[in-house]
Image 1: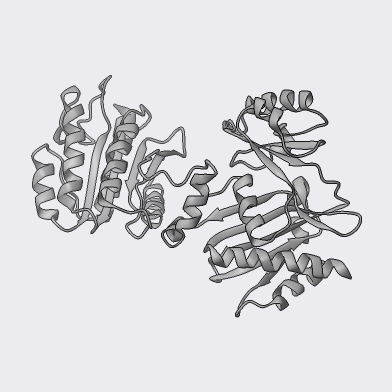
Image 2: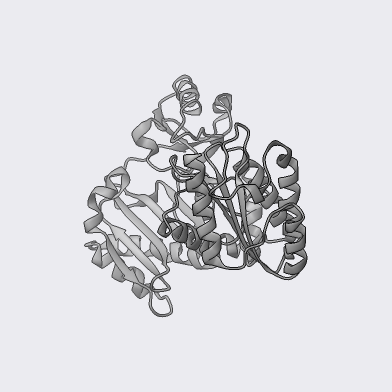
Length: 398
């Protein structure tokens, strides 16, 4: 889960990372009660990067100009996302702009410090200049100074930037984060540093250890993880197979297997792994129920492949959800027993065929429940993938 800029800067402020005076703006008229002096900068609060390139960041010298700018930004979608609030911040005259980040590198299983003397919107153009330092032992100020030196900094800037890196690392560890980024870190002509933008990526699996972080997100009007949301992710407009799994690793594995077998996934849904902090039987069942309904309404989806490995939710309870969904829609279509690749018949109101594999407790009872509505429970992973791909291809020729 990514935080919005104003949420990230609240964490920066608490940690001692220098940030500018700012104020959250929920509607343009809030600018009439602005408590920070002009000139200001107004920033769209969306989860997409590159706001400045498309008009999501505007400067204003007075209230009238600020209200007009706010109205424009509120009505400006960035990659389809409209901001629910803006951040009004004091203007800062930066002489130079740097890039700093601390990220969790999963391949080496260690935090990595990243830094470059070129920051801001053009940081991607200087990716070959990015320096990195792997924190391979217990963190100490040595790592921060080493990063500053590798960036080519000299004199007092080494101390100033090192201090910011140390505080970023403290924040990174304190909240078990995946990423802390400052882009840009502004440097004034006098050498004063300021975090002009910030990004924080929270590890959802660690939120159970940080109720204060969840409270911060809620207090600031942010969006903590939606425990019941189940929105399939579209990946290929020409695909025909929808995939429902629990757990990111399992979902990606099934996507790969389907593609290797010659199938084309069009959408997928991860209802959530059982080790997540927010995992509960009711939440996972709700996500499955809602996900099937949404995916089944997608006319592009010809086959829904359900592959769930569960101990938290018994297989028979999962089967209850699947059979209830099938029975709600079944009167409009022929039963699955007739939806074999060689006999699949086109139907204007056809719901997707279901291919189901469940592993866990109460699997025998689940098999009986599914069999009662002509839905076989498949044991073999290969057979499940083969049948889903065959059904999807047959649907295209029927």
